[in-house]
Image (tube, rainbow, N blue to C red):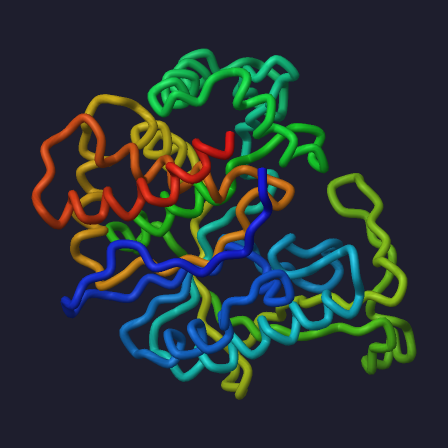
Length: 340
C-alpha cells in the first residue's frame, strides 16, 4: 500500500459547530507537497477548534515516547517533528479548549489485532493470548462487507511488518474517544502539562543529580530502554503554576477502556445501533472533522478508522447531510480498495 501523509477535511459545513482537529500522525511535512503547516496553524488559532491527539504524553524517566512524537529513522527529521509539536502546543495555548488525548498507554490497550500470513485477523488478549471470538467474527464480517478479501489483507498486512504484523488499532480507539469526549467529558481527567524538548546534552541542575545527563537508560515495566545516540525526545512535565508553555490536557480514565472497546465494535457491526447513530449525529453537529493522517506508515489503523466511520453510514436511512458525508468518506476508501 502506498504510504501517504495527508491533511483532510471530512464533513465540512458552514454551521457554528466545533472544528475537530485530529493530529493522528507525526507532523512529517517532509513527506508531502501539501502546505500542511499553514492549514494546521490557521485551525489552531480558531477559538472554535478542539485539538485531539492519539498520542499519550510521557514524563522524563518513562522511556520511549509515543510514535507520533518522534521519528526514529533520522535525527534531523526527528528534531523537526519535536519543534513542530512545540509550535502546535504554543499556538494552541492561546485557545481556551484543552488538548484532548484520545490514546491510552500500551498496558491499557489489551486487545491486539494479529494479522496472519493467510490474511485472516485474530483479535487476542495481549496478556494471556486468548482469542476474543465474537470480536474476531465482527471484524471478519466488517472486512467482508467492504469486499476486503483474505488476498487483499495479505497485501495490507505488510504495513504492519515493523510491528511483527500486530496492531492495537490505536487510531480507531482514538476516534471512539473523540466521540466520548463530545458526549461524556466526565470520562476524562484534566492535567496541566508543559512539553519540553530534551536534547542529548541536557543535564540536571538539582543538587542530588547535578551534571548528570537527562537522557539515560531506564527500565520500564521490566524492559530496558536506551535513548538513541544523538536523538532528542519530547517529554511532558506536570505544572501547578502558570507558565507560557503550559497546556491543559484531558486524558481518558483508563478504567473506561471496556466501554471504549464496546463502542468500537458497535461501529464495526452491520446493524444500526445507538453508537453508530451518535457518530452520525456528531459528524452532523460539528463544522468539520480535520485529520492529519499517516496512511499505511507502519500501521493500518489510520485507514481502517475511515472505514469504521463509513460503516456508521451503511445499513441505515440517511438524510442529505449524511449522504454528503458518506460520499466524502467513500471517495477516500474507494482509492484504497482499488489499490488493494
